[in-house]
Image 1 (cartoon, rainbow, N blue to C red):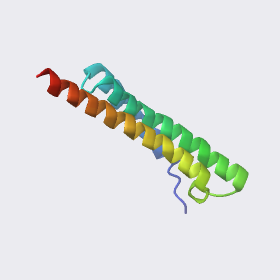
Image 2 (cartoon, rainbow, N blue to C red):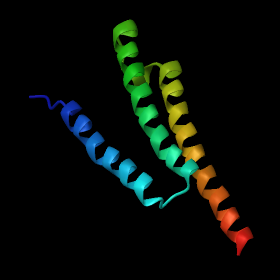
Image 3 (tube, rainbow, N blue to C red):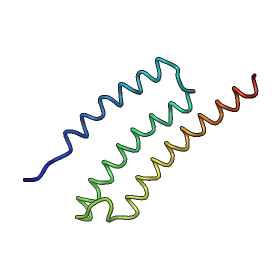
Length: 98
């Protein structure tokens, strides 16, 4: 008996979307850092599309197709870079204003 994790994955988006909503309303992080968390959703979407392409076109898993896997992971790198950049710039702004 195989377990399909897809429904759990879809359900995990609900708390993440709630987190993004709270983050925007609370203004707990600078806008650029918030964009980094939002870009994580883009990474998820790109990864899903890349996995489908790998399965349909190459009859393989995403991890077996380096170009598709690396391209999808580049979006995670972008999201993390934007998040860290937003935090660093905000920290520098706070230090210079005190």
